Length: 211
Ligand SMILES: *[C@@H]1O[C@H](CO)[C@@H](O)[C@H](O)[C@H]1NC(C)=O
Ligand SMILES: *[C@@H]1O[C@H](CO)[C@@H](O)[C@H](O)[C@H]1NC(C)=O
Ligand SMILES: *[C@@H]1O[C@H](CO)[C@@H](O)[C@H](O)[C@H]1NC(C)=O
Image (cartoon, rainbow, N blue to C red):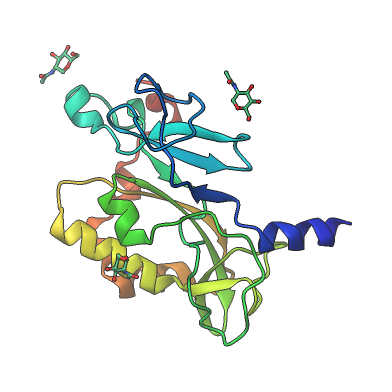
């Protein structure tokens, strides 16, 4: 039963843009929406089976938190739009030659996510094929049918974005299954991202984080 459910989830897309918008012009955030006649500014109509039933008005753009307030607060006092399994992108071509059998979570590629205001990326890193790969897998093991791409490809997209936008802050949240010694260190160095790294030694101690 468990595996049947898994397969059904794989076959049917979980979240879709629907060609429809809020219908009465007064639709507000999270209202139900049905037609494309009228809709509130900055909103669009979205269906996401795992999040809610039907279609709801959701935001179509982000708010820059540093313009909303200013940048005088500590890092942990701001909210950042963050994508779960940022690398698990719909329609991403298999790079292993084996059709992928795992769930996707995003419609936009990493570069698009960053340009759309995403500032936190959740990445699952595994040892695979003699390298570090991003996989949507389980039990710490990446397979050819759960692998998305070598992590360096994604890290290079982030490097390119930060090089073009050096005042932006991007937070990477790693689910780390890499056992190869210095595996992560190597892939981050090779990607060119280290020049943007916030030094671990400058991180506040736990007691300071709430300040
Ligand atoms: C919105 O749509 C959902 C799912 O179709 C339905 O259960 C709910 O009653 C609707 N809410 C309103 C306020 O119409
Ligand atoms: C930043 O915004 C806060 C809250 O509005 C304000 O108290 C503070 O004076 C501002 N700081 C600067 C440097 O503008
Ligand atoms: C991301 O998507 C955009 C828009 O479709 C495309 O132009 C770009 O080449 C893509 N980038 C990567 C790395 O896939």
